[in-house]
Length: 494
Image (cartoon, rainbow, N blue to C red; front, side):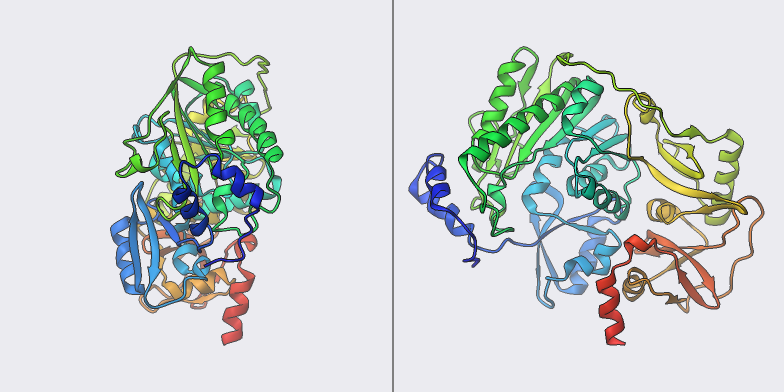
């Protein structure tokens, strides 16, 4: 039990006013002092659940299904300590994401009535570190347009790294306060997720100090921020679109209160979408309004709140400001596009997905979904899609992101690597060429692309590029992705 969890008496008194019975309050307080169960989500952009189960079995991992997420599992082990799960080769390669079980609820709710064909445009208003965005991208199967926004500049790089690690290529990243979307992109998105910043009362099992600065005044201040964000999110929806609002807090001010204010202000164009049938057992946490209010003892998880609304008609923001920005990308010429596609196909045996456009920015070549044509002149993105190549004096070099996003499609000039190689790769070390792979360098192909490299595959998914130099695979992993602690651990053992 985590007896170090700080739970002030003022909070207990406040919570008791919202809890129906003394018995329920006791259960909530008791479980808040217990460690949180480890949970993961299989990244189906990289590997199927059945394939991952085989890996888990070989490791002695026990996967217990999470009722509301087909790809989510509580994780136990009979063979090893799971504290270093983030340095697992399967995590480094993006086969799974370490994600708290309750946080898998909002993306599931968001797309519960959709399929990849109608989820064309989705906005995630507060995205970092990327757990929910990568889950949404997997549910979209990398189709359509996913706009991921993060206000904190320090967290934008983390978001970008996690999306790339998970093989997401249909996302754009923006860096704004979330209240701009209703003004700049009104009536634009099919789906919007607002996982709002909150007081974090439900995360006490993960963070024993979550309530250190708790106060009733803070709750009301942050509820004002939440309402500003949810109003913007609702205005950014198309007519017929779906908004999912969530927090990891327990109080009604930030949850039901924010939702009730939204319904009051948009009463003629808003409709609650009840979540009582979202998953088997949802009735245990359903509210009279049709929201999910997950107290941590109900499913032995973090506390969470999820509400969903449908927009019935267009809305106009009171301060409409059609923000325009010079789009820094230019269409890549048809001739150069054909040549680069030819080089990719001739070398690796595949063509890029047809739903992607090829654009250039300075000396870089990017691909992103066609849906971005509708918003690219109206909004400024921090980055858009995937950078697949860079121009150099002697030609064009394909990037790590190209291999990570599309390597799974390759049918030739590939090297299958194992768990040991993954650790070496992310430690920044070169790796010996597996004996069952070709040991001689490839001949340089004709055309613009001059760098001769293999795509490294791990369980069929692209990991990186590597050049064969005298029987060794030269590590080309970008420096920011090198794990210094992993390298220290590896070299200290040798």
